[in-house]
Image (cartoon, rainbow, N blue to C red; front, side, top):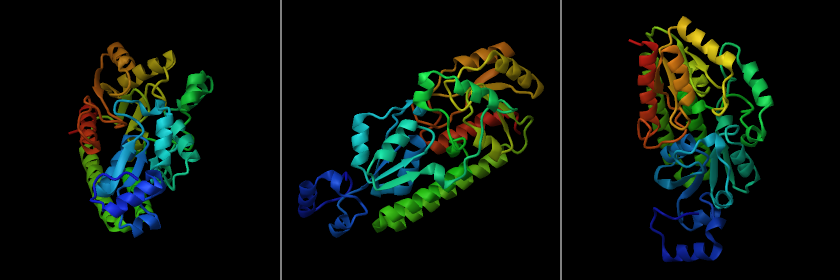
Length: 328
């Protein structure tokens, strides 16, 4: 257990030193008997999970993200140091199906509390629209060893649930309950923090519903199919250059089809994201006379992000979508 924020008695420090920092958990009877000797240590797989843990845990948690800012989360490979860090933590919060190396490491870890966000809401099947899923499934079946290594199959559905504020709120409620069970001494605070976060997410949902209600087109084009849940929530149609895998190169036929879709559906903008190359988006936009803009999947916050946290970046996404869809 990492001790960072609380005043700890000399006796408690001696007890922790004798037992070793990795042997106590925030929810153990030993910890409770010692008067709560430190924070509840949570390892989060990537930014959307870390954000939940920090908002819900507040001052009672110390959160470490396995994915560094600016790192594409799909490509993460767990290091030996991170594996050891997992074993010394009280809880792991991850999204099964997005990062295979994380799934494997957490599955093999002795960590007491394992919270899979994918099991706290429903994951629908999404990909490129208009019947292109089959084409990309065939592409995935013939990927080289790098495709297998990074495992972009996303079994069980589209994992990008945090881009739908309603689903993200469902996950938040589940994480809050898990924290309350694992660290009952602070259950009341976790419950209150969860309620506040869910309220903010409902307000964000309302902003999207209102902001996108009156628009000229329903169709938007992205580099990869990260926004299926968001599109479904607000009655939009995402047309992705690639599938769920951001590294998949589109076929020539797919590019031509997107050019046709853009013309027929009044598409004005090709969206790219901050953590993936914008080359393909700019090429397609140049060939079709369209603009480019950022639609951020909020997989990590960097200096290039249009905001400092999830809510700010999502509101920037709403502004970008309103412009691209001709919302009034």
